[in-house]
Length: 79
Image (cartoon, rainbow, N blue to C red; front, top):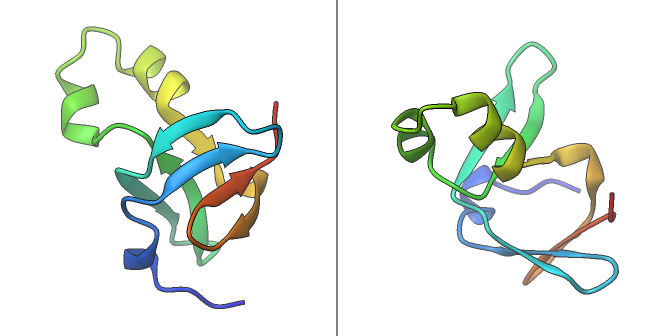
């Protein structure tokens, strides 16, 4: 399946058990692999203002490999 990256922005992310995680604010690409690496629930510029960017990134990052379906919402596997 092919989808434009721009179509991911603003979509709700929900786990396969029904928990709402948030909306896609940023999409991180792996240019070497040519694929989406992460979906972020917070904009990078907001995380950069935080004292601990790594903690913010860990809390607000969804690995794209967890995505099982993209439609009106994005469904991801629960951790």
